[in-house]
Image (cartoon, rainbow, N blue to C red):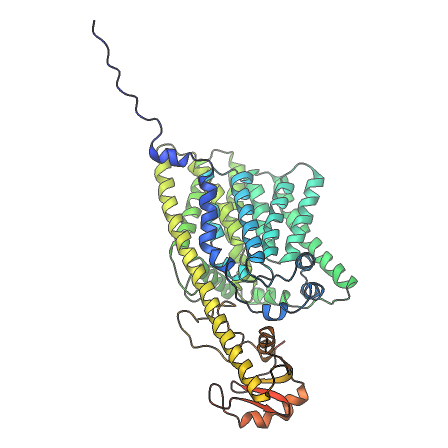
Length: 506
């Protein structure tokens, strides 16, 4: 009797699918991307501008500074943490909480598949502008808290409970009270609610929720300022110039496009290195988002609402830069949320493809990997520049301390110091200043120089205005740094002559 030979059954899951099916792998790779980008900064120590002052004061005084700036949420958090000018803690908390927030947003709240969520969160979470905000240990931990508050806002806003919606407004108001440009991320998430549920009610809810969050935050700031008798300064409002936008709308629009594109292309004008892959990845995500709007079946009204909301999300960075008079890279930490929201729309479109889906995912995955590696390289170059300049500054501070002791014959004497002129290190691959990163503490102001020296154990304090005026003629006759005799002691005052006198900066 003939027996039928049954051919062996091929594996139903290939090696590629077997790897993809590991449940925790996407989250692990996302965490690895964050570690690759920020690990150096977390586990090293160097100061960023402002920290030379903050390192020597208590919680109450630091909180008072935040109240004056209108950042009442930051003031509140400051009271709960010991001085954050230290390695690991503040930066580690900020990056860890932000990473958790980005993952939950992409995977759970926006419903992206695991690998799509990992790609979107890794791309957004490694954008090099974040290096500028996470380098500030004074605020890094609070940025992480703010990103977690964004999740509360998103969950509450799309809830049917008015109590949850009230909690959403309070959470968003607190985030704005931590740092003003959380408002941009809040607007992006409000638009994400509209994209998910394109109804007139949700449009109104998104607008009202965003505006109300800003109003509540501002009122809370004014109330706390009044109670603590700490009048608010114009520090944060000085960055916005609505009148300038109204006067020259075309010029400001062109400037906004130039500025945002310069960030997405990681231009050397703004960063120490350049990489094209971030812009390629973001453009790819934007194109796929448009495709997603086309392929996902929906009534025409809903489709038009979604298109308008997606365009509004994409336009947010340009609108902000058109209103802002100065592009501050450290304030653009809203970009991850915008990228993740756009990626969620793209993901919804990709999953509707059958045969070409795997090819699309592989191509996009390759682009995202190259972009993340490029982002990490650019960010770490910025961190290494900051560390190099900080090392040079500390060497100079040590030299000043030694010469002071030699001139006075006693290292325990606390003397007033007159600092004439500013000093910057020669421009090089690892000493090029980009915004706050790589900026020497000796090139900002005489007051910062004095505080930096004192923070590093050089017993000096600022000279009085009378002492500065009395020693002007002496300074003019002194050699300049680094010539012999650039430091001197006159009438009990230490003189540091870096060059022509500069007006003091607070």
